[in-house]
Image (cartoon, rainbow over all chains, first blue to last red; front, side, top):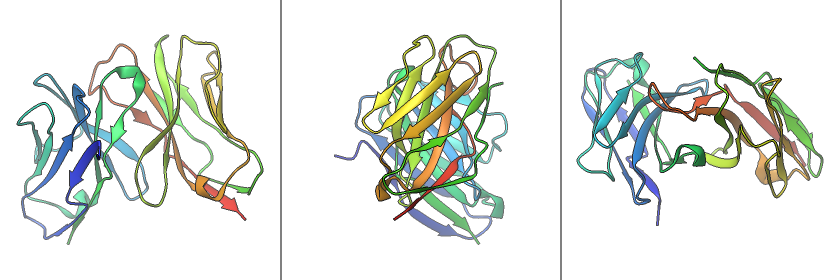
Length: 112
Length: 117
């Protein structure tokens, strides 16, 4: 029944590793997003993906890459993890702009 | 670029009382959407209320209401009859109607709301 589901909920990994976070939505939404929430709780958009169009926030390092196998999935791949990548990552989706987003429950990534 | 400012890092209110959380924003657009999201300790982001800028009537959802002042670019959230379950981080957010960029929500830094029993 979960509308937007992310896995895993927690991820601890060493610097330099490559990891992925999966996201799936069963709402039939057209657009999916990835957000990063830092240690001060500030939320910032990383990517949006709609109809095969990927829009990237210019501040996101190219070590981060979203991949969408189909309309219901938008996975986040991170290469060469750094300590500063430690954060909570949220997946979200929306149908229409004014209705707001539905968020996943977040993935807490800790890089050691 | 749009910015959203929440000037109260933390607010405290007695249970059953009313509290108002402040939010101001800066934009050159005339049509947009505003939202309040709640993030309890579970970290789930929950939509509390939304407002369309072209509507003058303030949105309400049960105990939650907003005071939308378009000219002043202010969008405050009022929580009436505060309950222990209202304790959370509250984020104000802006979304352009016309899109552009990463087409995302622009968030404020949040207000941590504490409910005193």
